Amino acid sequence: MKKLGSMLGVHAESEPLIAKLTEKLKQEGRFDRKAFLESRPPEVEEAAVNNALKLKPINNETGNLHFLHTSLASNIEAIYLAKQVSNGITVETCPHYLSLSEDDFLNIGP
Image (cartoon, rainbow, N blue to C red; front, side, top):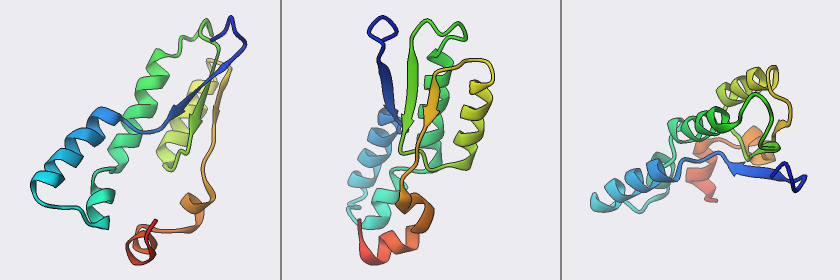
């Protein structure tokens, strides 16, 4: 990525954890909106961010790293701390993470 002058965008979701939780919920016959939320607890986002930060060398040999659609304050803190020792790390969120709740999702849908 560095040789290309590119940025790696990482979705803040751990696919293995989501797949495991989704399979469990499907086996329980759960296909409701609450099941969708339960398949993506905060630990899923935290795991993805922490794993990516562990892979980003302090010497910046890999180029830029950007976290997409982050929704947890704890991840913002972890990214902020990582930025203190390694440049080329950025993060974004989405407006609906700042203005809508899980109850809104359950009531009005995605």
